[in-house]
Amino acid sequence: MAAGPIKRFLLRLPGFEGACLRLTRDRERVLMYHRFTDDAAAEPDATPADRFARQLDLLQARCQVVGPAALVDQEEGRRPRSRRPLAVVTVDDGYADFERVAFPVLRERGLPAVLFVTTGFVAGRSWMWWDKVHFALARAGTAEAAVTVAGRTVRGPLRTRAERGAFWFRLVPALRFVPDERKEEVIADLAGQLGVTLPAAPPAEFAASTWDGIAAMARAGIVMGAHTRTHPILSRVDGERARQEIEGSRDDLAGQLGEPVRWFAYPQGGPADYDDETVAIVAGAGFDRAWVAYADPALGDHPYRRPRHMVPADLDEFRWSVCGAEHLVLRLKAALGRPTGVSDGYWTGSDLAAALNAEGKEESA
Ligand SMILES: [Zn+2]
Image 1 (spheres, protein in one colour):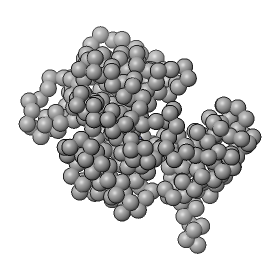
Image 2 (cartoon, helix red, strand yellow):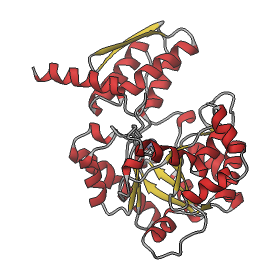
Image 3 (cartoon, rainbow, N blue to C red):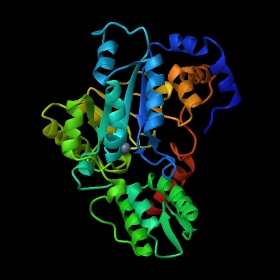
Image 4 (cartoon, rainbow, N blue to C red):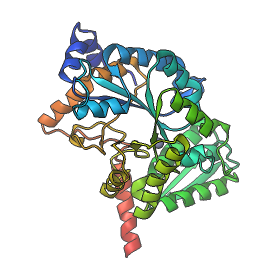
């Protein structure tokens, strides 16, 4: 989405960005990327190399780009306070496109970044559940499908690419609010209806990096963090499974790299995607810091609920976020008693959560 006229006007005022940067100097910018692409036209939601390069150059001009250890050292007084805000580039999941498209851009500039690795994905034992939905829909052998999620039927025609896309956008957010086993059942049900066999390992378009690739990038300055083994939504699995996923990914990664893993990011990372029990497991697993996938002043300074900023494709929106104006607006809203949470659509899915509660009542009756 392009920046609105007020944002564009303010960003063009001489001194506006500089003032925002000074006012938010102590606030780190942790940017969150997911997919990268060689073909921006075919994959509009992924970041192409040229845009990533422009964003990094803009970020470097305003902030000091560091790894997470420097962030913690400054926070804990072991490092002199930087004159410019510190910024950390993070990338989630471990898709091969990071290694192919984004890593060379970082290396050219000598910049660090954190890669949060889903270790079962890299090991070839699992692939991402939303990619399975995408894969099944793209190969649909039927004109429509209907699956039940949280007491609701998601039904739709699947004849065109647009119809399949619309179905994906209704089903995938809904699946975040059901127990993990139910999510897998729904995906299997959908694939069955569509006559599609899901391979055990991800096909090329959804492939992960290899362990060799991860090790090579680690040697070249990419900091590796854990991101569970199979990327379940941790608030939708029981405590024991959550512990296995979190500690398992830490151990897999430490075993491959031969060094302790200090950093963690919650899969999906929205407010409903982890809970207090998840945070306690992460804290107990010996990580130094853990990141969520949204920025809200209400998160405070909790070491295991560090904020991150989604990276907007639009360069003005990117400047707005990086200069700190976005954070200042949130602080202003907080001061005025207005909501500052990521309370819209995807992240809280309030309507879907209500549907889930309704289903819970049915089950307990
Ligand atoms: Zn993820």
